[in-house]
Image (cartoon, rainbow, N blue to C red; front, side):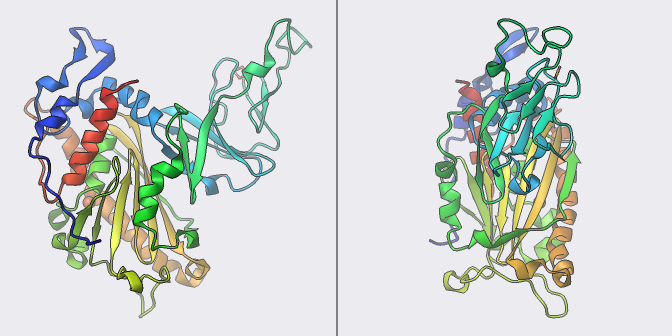
Length: 405
Ligand code: FES
Ligand SMILES: [Fe+2]
């Protein structure tokens, strides 16, 4: 398969406009439906980035029906560990039980809905709600409800304890990534990720080791702008001069990967080195000519992955509000030899580079957000050669939001 796989965009870009109708659950006073088809514009309209009603729709569709990465298996390494997380404001807790099984629950007490776990912790066998002391086992079942039936009585006639356990969420794992599917009816995670696994079959991802240093950041922009920015290299020349000096815009390529995921990459990745030393690489890349290739895949909707000969990158994007996004960036290196104290400074090279790159990107996406306040923003337009992944991502969002059931 060639790395130059840039296909033309569909000539009728208005197709996206046709697919961007969505019903508003909490309508503006003047209208209960926004007819996005009326806009006839190539990209998602400003409202998709600025209106809380659109984010509500995304919560019910994009973030509910698809597999969403919400954390890492290594966030709960030990039996009893619990890790609170969320997606688009919906609270979730990951729990590892006594036997090592990883579970996900809605992070709410069945009594009156308090957020159950507020900080990463070890539950020591049970999760206790601090409000009225209901306790749950690590499998989610309700263990005790002190005084719920009156003083010194923990129940009353007709109280159905079995139905009051924690609400489980369908959960599965790939590598260190923990995914949830809130609707419970998405196709198996394995199928969903098969195109990614196929694309990266030459990399022995089982060798990945997590770096303890991670990067978290917050920006004043819609979450989709962060994803879109990651999915195109058109801006590299101007926004990332340091990056561009080693991997120029023309060294980048887009590639087809089964929808709704999108991908792009670089043919000129250069490994960092200090005093002639470099980090270990995935074995066998020479045979597939991948020693200088870096590839990036946006796993729809909000997980961005990057594979390089000597490290793997994971970027979790989480909307806090229509105009606020939190991102968590994690790095994995290849094999135990990459994780010694002596190689720490080498491991920090890509982390520092990405930190700098993120800062440069954030200014751009925050200004994209400001631009979407303009009454004249018309959805923009795309370079068929360099921004097809952005177009496809927007199309996938529009399709999901337009089909609420
Ligand atoms: S809200 Fe949890 S015990 Fe009351
Ligand atoms: Fe960038």
